[in-house]
Image (cartoon, rainbow, N blue to C red; front, top):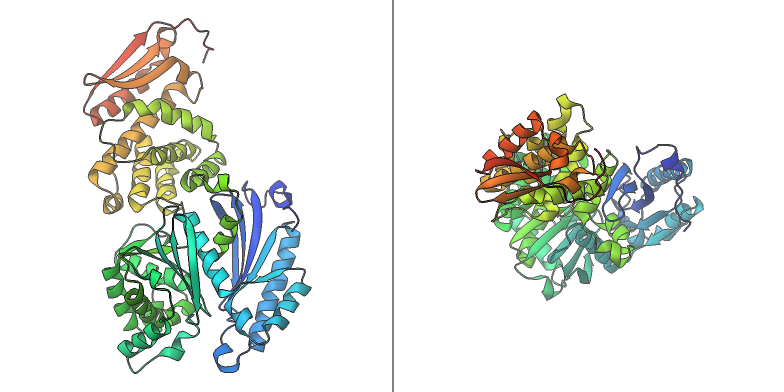
Length: 509
């Protein structure tokens, strides 16, 4: 493939995001184009369009891709080809999965795709499972357990651990094929599905985590999130104990698609699949026996991206990579945020509830939020923390970042939604992070000299702000209030201390 073009970047097509590449995923349900930008370690979707061609809808009956489905898919693919040429994006991966590999006329269809100038890669079931697992590993670096990727034509199951996938299996249990396994009732259907899983490796059984990949699983998560009034809208990373999932699937199996469709976030297609998918998940839980279930929005497409990264890029922290790219586009160089985080570390007390990576991420977002109009700043910044798709961060971590961003604006009366996700101790620490960031940025106005002529620390029951005597005028009334706010929150006395100059020639502010 030709190395990507920067044409879309130069033209401002994607608001500053580096356009890295595109992926076309030819699945049994949908044909989808996704264009990615941002950090290679934490890519963001800058364009996402699908055609619900349902290529695999007649394979069980006829063994072929339906003519109308092929026509619809090709219409979408012609549009995708034109868009990619207009955007000058040359690095394009095209992958085809179950429908294309199982249908008698799959080779004929892929020949039409090649005629458009694409180079489609037909994935074997085991390859599809492995790449989906790589996507989960990319999103959850410490992932251990089983990945279940549910598509329209197949269900891929694969064990993961130690940042690598094991041998996987592909089963003909996609959403389009599940109706063929219905029994006299729900229990009979589950028994039929369990039998279909008899060839799955015994290594899939265990007490770890089951990672669910695929749009139908995510729709199931949306239903669960709505029932719990969960304050985060993105299903990625949403987790439930296995017992709660069983109750959820039992509820779904009793609902009609029309009932499910009343949720405005569930499409008609997904609503029609969810009752059968609920029974499939019950069978899967019997087979795998996990302790918890985690829903992942990263799967096959993101697995392709992660699989091709150099080892040193894979080793990067996905949360910090994504936040750094996001913040830099909003006027916050990562080095500036790192220096602020280092300066404010002196305000940390023993028994920290959060991690340094989380505090650094919160610092980057807090500084970036200062580019927002003041009347919009807190609400939008909190939404960044809670609703944006960050990788490898827990719900409690999101709430802590949100609390820090609110406190950066001196808004410490937190919304109840944050208390649903994190403990009071965690939120209190995050508030102190935000107040420390506020003190730092207002004291020096983002001047790099501040870090050379001042420091913050805790000594004998006091929060001490030390300033080089030559820069004593830095300490104004607003900073006095900011120091007192932070000290009071830490249950310490505020103290400003002038220190003799070190003799180094510090530049003027």
